[in-house]
Length: 110
Image 1 (tube, rainbow, N blue to C red):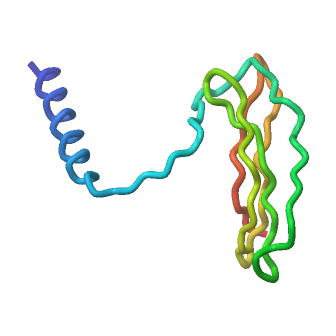
Image 2: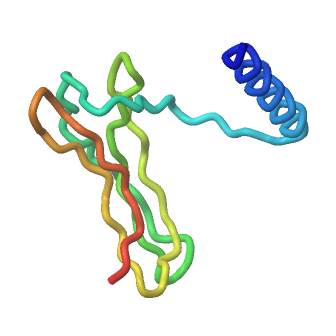
Image 3: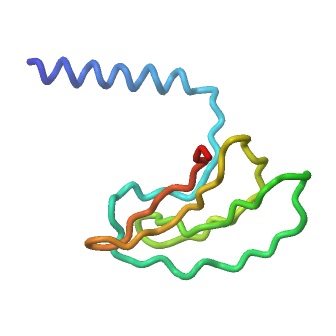
């Protein structure tokens, strides 16, 4: 009986969440594979050609290969305003036991 009540509460919560998000706008990005290890090595990084920054001080955040669960897809880089007191740590793939692990890029304190 407890399991049925728990499932009913979970379904009710999901329904309320869906109704609450009815007016939200969602932008599409390539699907992210949330698995811990990918057996397929990423290709070599693509060479990106980019022009001048949109404003003084902007930095280029280079593109990277994202795993979709079926294959690697290139996500192009972009310009971004720097964050005072932080430095950008680029996305990267690290080879480990059993395959490749993706480490998401992020802003790290200096």
